[in-house]
Image (cartoon, rainbow, N blue to C red):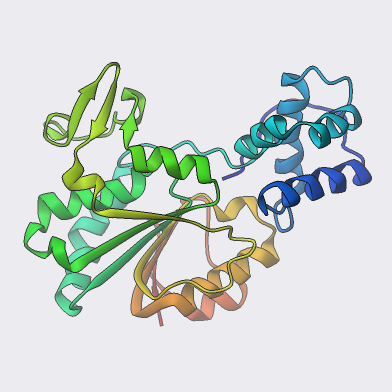
Length: 273
């Protein structure tokens, strides 16, 4: 999702900011409502500099005339950086505690990775299931969700540069990937286990029922009120005693605190009540 960049740029006038928001909403349905203004403006300034526009106002005019630039800005605003087994201790906790409990108590499991970027997170779940719970693999559905359609297409392609694979355990690269030039393609027995769909957290009011939701390092870019709405929507979607995993800098607050109990505070793992 959105993230900040360093540097001090001139502020974007409210009318220019609103005009940019209208252009993006018309182009793709993506809305800036709910995101933290500072994060959004810093990302807009990346494209102001890249296009050598003399001012945000000039960039706004360019944006209104160029669908190519609209696509560039959308990509910058929804950019993701992820890799397989990001924060390995989280996945170890899922593999040793959360998934065994869920598999023992449910006939079928539905797992969802929200803000899935290039698919690294849901594919990591698929890898864990294949390696540690192969006998249960057919009982598990994994879904990856992201706001950006182009990113989802890359996730479906499942081809990765080596920098996305640095946390793999010894032998996993050879077991689960085929070399393709300087990159590596995930084998079909894993890539075929994940279904991908597009959704915008600003618009999504309801989610399909599920047993585990991973939404890590996504909520931090939303205003507090919107975060609370999103967390309550997760609680509504989770089956009784279903699990929620947040990022290390995220936590529950407001009314959402009453909807979950803490399972592992270090790894930000919670359980619906």
